[in-house]
Length: 382
Image (cartoon, rainbow, N blue to C red; front, side):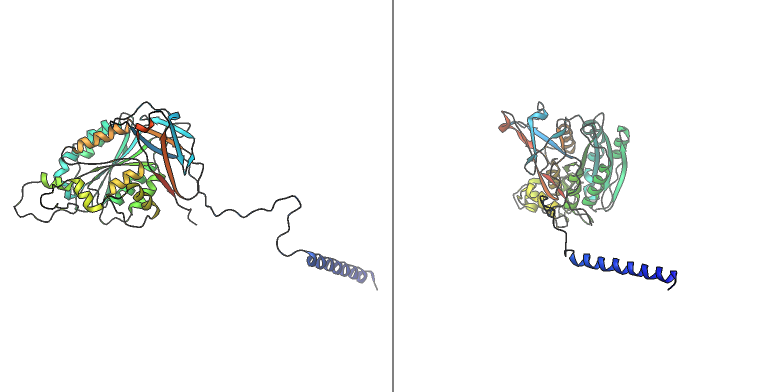
C-alpha cells in the first residue's frame, strides 16, 4: 500500500472516532433545559403584567374653603398624592404660575346663531383673563366640519380678531372630533419637568354639549386627554337661551333645535331641568372611569360635564344670571389660582390608575379639593 492510501485510511479512522464520540455524548445529554447549578435559584417566569412608559402625570388641584373661596397658602409639603393607593413623590409644584397653552374650541353651528354676537366679543376675555401675560392660545371652530382658525400664538390681537370674525356655519355638531383635534394640538406643547417649568395644557369648549356624527368617541378623547395631561373646561351654551334671544316668531312654535327639551306645563325651562331630563343623576366620576375603560361605548351624560370631571376642570352653564362673559371670567380666575402637581408614577402597569390628592393640614376637613380622578394606561399595540 502506497503512502497516499495510508493517509486516506488514517483520516477516515479519525472521522469515524469523532462521530462515535459525538453520538455517545448526545445520548447522555438530558432532554429539556439544563438543571440549575447547586445553590442557584430557578428563574421564575415573569408575572402577567404589561408595563408601559409614563414619563409624567400632572393634575390640576383646585382647593376651596367652606365659603367657596380659593385657598392660596398651601405648599407642596401640605399635599399627599397617591397613585393606585401608593404615595408619590411630587416632582413639580406650582400655584397659578406656569404659562398656559390654551385651545379655544368654539361651536360655530347655525343653531346658536343668536348667541354669536356675545361669543365674538369674548376674545378679549380669553387673552386677558385666561391666557394671561405669558400664555398662548389657538382657536378651533366646529359644526359639520372641524376648522383650525388660528394656530398657537401669544399675540392677543390675533386671537381677538379671530374670535371677532367667527362665522356661523351649518347645523352640525362634531364635538368629539373637534375635542380630539384640540387634544392633539395641545400634546405638542412642552410640559413641566422637575428641572424646568413647562406649559399647562387647557382645552376650553364653548358648546351646547351635544354631538352629532363624530367619528371619535368621547371615551377615546378623554383617555388621550388624561394621558396628555390636558385639562378640559366647558362653557355650556343654552339653546333655550338662544331661542329666547332670537327674533320673535309666530305664536305657533316650530320644532325646537336639537338639544332643547321643552319642560312640562308649569315647569320653568332651565339648564338644570334639561340635564336631569337627559342624563339623570349619574355619578360623574364613576361614569368617567367607565368611559375611558370602554372607549367605544356611547357616553351617557352631559359630555362637557364628563370631560371636565375626567380631567380636573369644570363645566359652567350659561343661563339667566351667568353669561358667557361671566363663565369665562370664572374659569380664568380659577386657572390662575390653581395648584399644579406633577409626579412620575412608581407603578406603570396597564389599566386604570386612580389619583387621590389630599391636604395634610389641621383645617383639611373644611377644604374642598378637586383634581382629576385618574388615567387609563392601555397595553402597547403588538
